[in-house]
Image (cartoon, rainbow, N blue to C red; front, side):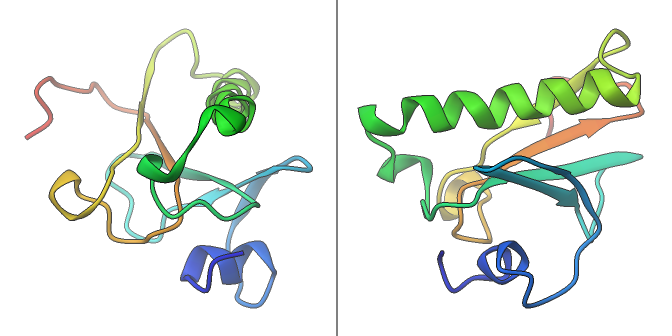
Length: 114
């Protein structure tokens, strides 16, 4: 796992409010939430950015999105709606270089986001 804060969370070296876990995916609440629900879904295996993903990572990328959808259903806000976001590199807004999917919910989302 990458030596980032997310890698340390995945290795349980630092605490996080973990809300979802499978063999390949871990999800925890964002420390700086941008919505009433703001959860980050990370692969346990290291990928720094979406740019590093290859065809061999397609299944893992799908599992990240399916985990977010499963969590939304479990928590009861799937039908109302939510947003998933993947930021890539500095100009895309990525600040932690361990690929992650943001799940935002609990308020009306607007487009464009800002």
